[in-house]
Length: 501
Image (cartoon, rainbow, N blue to C red; front, side, top):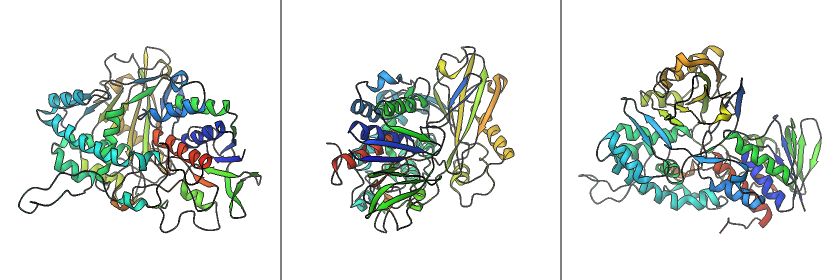
């Protein structure tokens, strides 16, 4: 069978490699870094361990399918997955708090009514019902299939906005809007608005410009649940790497690919930084499509009529992380994930998405996600606790030490709403600002004339494919895994393949 060169060892690239290897192809992976897993990173020190990328898995069916299709052992035989309950706890700017149960529509309605007042749950439920319509309309074209040649049809927002009322809206049909406009019009309560917009912010989307179809983000979480892998999300990367090795995928680390070799008008291998050339009949490239395009001097990989890598209207922000080692046991009733919502929505959105990078900083009261896994693998013993704080911050860099420490101080101060007495329990902290080439990558979204789509997996060079969170169908562990499935499907089944039935 054909030899395949894979650039990068992120989750999308490894998902493609495992599927291609089990189909009988010889697969070699070239990773410029020292390890695999892409965004699923883990920081360890003194017996403590912290996820520094995505902390939870949504849509676990993507990896269940991957492991079933690539070997005899199912996913749960390789990774211990469990649903976290509550799925999340939210502390709003006015001090109101609510815990939302995992994958329970009725439970979420009851919890919101109890915390925010009668009717809040029903408003949220009606919104999620409309989000379901958007999910049903886009699930296949934006998750399970290659990006369609007539991708322009995905520029229309499928979110079924409510009909306008009032003197100037009477008789007019549904309108499309940004996520922020939908939130203001349909949810009304600023706490429900914050709940919705926090999902967008976590994926690096500005709710003021993101399409209403971004409503699928909370829908996916609420419908398919939030799952944690014992040993952290890095355990999922470990399992996929081991599956690749079992299927005889070859990995070379510290191997930077600097060019794509072409022969007779198609991809024929990769050129490494040390001058070596590895021949291949197909090349699968993970990472940044802009960087991939720079490896091919012969012309653009995506034409003017295609979805290009510069299609997003703003630079994707990054994830600022602080790892905290605490003395004292984790309370048994602690929520795995708590979102402490921002104090000033306008100021936070301006700081994260405003024009011009300026000095690196966070706003006064940022939205902070607090992860407190009940996982013995995360701590040296039961008399200690590992806590991870993260916030979405503006793109650009670098972060100097003073700015990073000041930002960490703000995250720790905010996190005390989720972990009372946090600073008194602190043994040490590690500040992990984002690198400029590590943006938060969200899934592709329909609407807004296609500005939130991702470059197609197929390129204009036969035999060269793009994979991973910055290509179709976008970022997040599940979507990256699906990009690997799509690329493998195109190579194994041919260019006319339109996705699994």
